[in-house]
Length: 220
Image 1 (cartoon, helix red, strand yellow):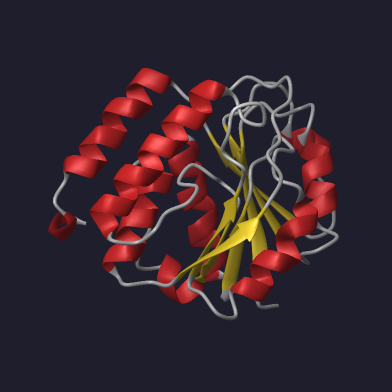
Image 2 (cartoon, one colour):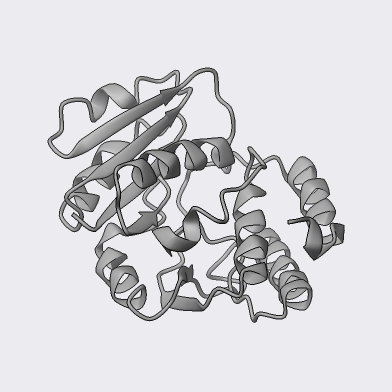
């Protein structure tokens, strides 16, 4: 097996079973990382063939959950790692497109339509600003910096494991990859926002994002 899917989740009882079920249609192995859920999410996917559940207690942050899944994938020798969120905002049916693009690129990111009416205005602003600043910092055109639907070659992933434990880890990975002169590819994915509430702490995340942008590239 040359690839797997990593799904970090925290209290996703409404969605996690369907996300994992659909992911298994396109990947023989799903590494589901339960980041301290208290709603019984993990029990819904226990016993599913092809699913490895890793548990973290207490809740430690998306970045740490991703790292936990990444390390397991690398230890098992997978060559391509796909990561997506556990709330059905990332349709697993797009996994084959990421795998195809990983034939040509080191790091592939899902690209959504970032405009009002499709994406909440607060997310349009934060994504547009963060993508612009990341592009300026790295010298690479970053189109959707906040997308969690990604594909990464193992050869690159082992070099860009983030130190941050929260959501800002995904920004850190982009910066580290750019420093390594990795090639970036993009896959068009739908922009989906339902009734779920974001678990991101906006002020804390903003402060950490600014610190990442101001941090000299040589320090990564």
